[in-house]
Amino acid sequence: MASASLARPFALSAPGLILFITLLGTPLILTLMLSFYKFDFTTGIHPAFSFGNYLEVLSDSYFHEIFGRTFGVALLVTVICVLLGAPEAYILSRMRNPWKSWFLIAILGPLLISVIVRTLGWALLIGGRGMISEALQALHLIDAPFSLMFTTTGMVIALVHVLVPFMVISVWASLQKVDPQVEDAALTLGADKMTALRRVVIPQIMPGILSGSLIVFALTASAFATPAIIGGRRLKVVATTAYDEYLNTLNWPLGAAIAFLLLIANVIVIMSYNRFIERRYAKVFE
Amino acid sequence: MRKNGPIELVFHTLFIIFLLAPLAAVVAVSFTDKGYLSLPTDGLSVRWFMAIAQYPGFIDAFWMSIYLGLASATVAVAVAIPAAMAIGRYRFPGRESLTAVFMSPLMIPSVVLGVSFLRFFSEIGLSGTFVGIALAHIVLIMPYALRLVLASVTGLPRDAEQAAETLGASRWTVFWRITLPLIIPGIAGGWLLAFITSFDEVTMSVFVASPETMTLPVRMYHHIAQTIDPLIASISTVLIVITGVLMLLLDKFYGLDRVLVGKG
Image (cartoon, rainbow over all chains, first blue to last red):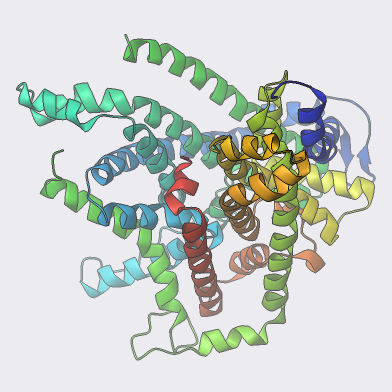
């Protein structure tokens, strides 16, 4: 009965498709057009086609710094998430129930709690009168209060916290397909722990690490709330800059151009990364 | 299988502390008896929870988020069910592309969705309306609803449906009496995950929400951007508790690990 007629699957998916074409396709096209329009502070938006906004972003060192910071932070957060998330997923996979399920929920649960709440938690911990500063002073480890608010370090810590569960999920999923006896076999055959890890475990979970990195990188590069709260006005990233252009300066065409450059940069990174993964895969499974 | 050694367990403990510390900090500060940010060292107090009642802005935003989540999750699931039946049950040209279209809101940065919806709604006169922000949320949460409904449709054995068909039941009867009851866990799980996603969403909503349609996370963001006080901590604690309850429900209906790890 399946595939008997084409009309049925199309009829079933029609509501969703119509919804997405009108409510996603149209806004994206309208905004892409908007990004080529001109903007004047006194007269507003002019529907004249030009690359002016894109040239402005691509040639201004102010925007270079913002894009550089955004992708630099995204890279750093991705590396730290690999270093923390992959070992944690591995440790978790070797635990027994009920510990395993409880810790899995403890790690994945925060994903469902608003990013605002989690970022607020970091602001409370790392601020000048924050808990870490107060605790270190009480222990006489430091003399003066110290604050990581409005610093890149603070931003990276909070973003790692927000995004590391995605890495754990990704590596965890690939560990489910791994036979733990293969590692045991390596150890029985005389490999030391490090060799077994390097030659047996890591190659098998590489696909999970790579796809996890992609998710973390893309989400960090487009993060808004955490950089806005921890970085503040001083440490702008692409998403907060687009927001400022839209809602403070009201230069919508420029804001649209910034947002689309973020989308384009993300797509380029994801596609070249996919190509890299395909090449790696051939090696891993040779 | 080898057991974890001491180094592994220390790493694990530090990792869990790192993940839970900010949430613990929020909860601890919300119980302070002082008028400023501090730990409740002289005793616990619920004064900042009582204080929430004096800020109608937050109460209104909370109900806005609830209504928005109810409306958009319900519509998203209603659209996702037939789409999941089409994708899960039929092989047709364009099936892969159709799935990619429905999943695309996950790939597009929320800030791009935000600027696009703001432009679109101001063009068609829906700017600042409940309908506008609800439509934006429906698109955003659709992938979550579809993924869980689709998983339950694809995992479904066909025997009972085929038996019903053989016995002369119409397509509608088969769907209502056999298929729908069997995929209810996926529908409930998808609805809850869609609701939670809508309820928590901030990046896109910050562009689309007007003062009249401001959701709770957006209002909290604007508050934190100005000042961080025990009030915002107590509101966050309420949110943590609500999310915890929803998480337990999701676990009961569908299994939390299945939802989050995406198996099954």
